[in-house]
Length: 264
Image 1 (cartoon, one colour):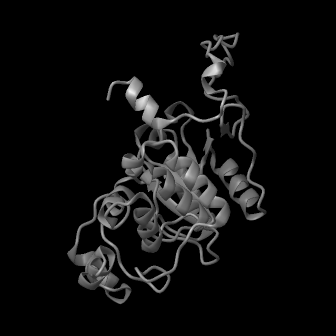
Image 2 (image 1 turned 90 degrees about the vertical axis):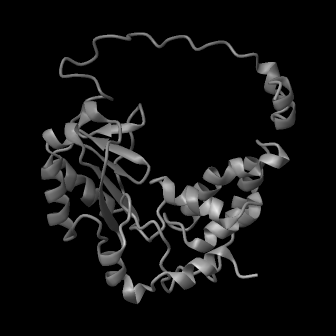
C-alpha cells in the first residue's frame, strides 16, 4: 500500500512549480502547510536516529504507558530536528510515526502546527526576530534592517553559505527586554543595531555570547529583565518546596502505576 507521504507528494507540485503553487495556494503562518518534494526531502529519503539518540528515544518512550506512545511525538520530532541540522525532512517524520505506531498524518499535523518545527532547511543560526508591538515600538524594524544589510538577505531568506536564516515572527514573550531575537534556542535581548552586528560577527566566528544567569542575554549589560534602577525586589532566593527524595530513589517511574494512582 502506498504511504500517506507518497500519496501527498504525488498530488502536490514539485519544487520546479513552487512559484506557481505559491500564487495559487494560501499558507497559514510562516511555512507552507503542505509538503513539496526537493532533492534532499522526499518520502524515499533515508533517515534514522543515531545509536546514541535511540537511547534517548527509549528514555522518552519509557515515560508513557505502552498504549500512549503517541505522547512522545513532540519530543521525538525535536530530537530528529536537532539530529538533522535544525529541520525536519518528511522521512524523519515518517520514522517518528513508525516508532510511536501512529499514522504518518498524525505526525505531519503536529509538525505543521507548531512553529518550533522547521519543515524546510534553515541556516546554522536560525534568527527569529520578534516584530510584535512592544518590540516594534522599541526598534525591531531597525534591527531587521541591520540584519538584512549586514547579511545581504531579506526576511525569510538564508545566506548563500547556509550560515544564517532570518524570519520575522510574532511575540516570543520577552517584551520587557525588547527588541530581541531568538537565535536557535537562545534569547538575545535589549538589542541595538550595534550589538546586533556584534552578535552576528560572533556567530560567524562560531562563538556566540554565552547565556546569562537566567537563560537569556540582555545585550546592554543588565541582568534578566531588571529595570533601569537595577534590582529592586526579590533579594533572597525563595526556598523551594520540599520533595520526598525517596519517591525516585530507583531512578525511574512506572507510568502505568502513576495512571493507577491518579484513578484513570
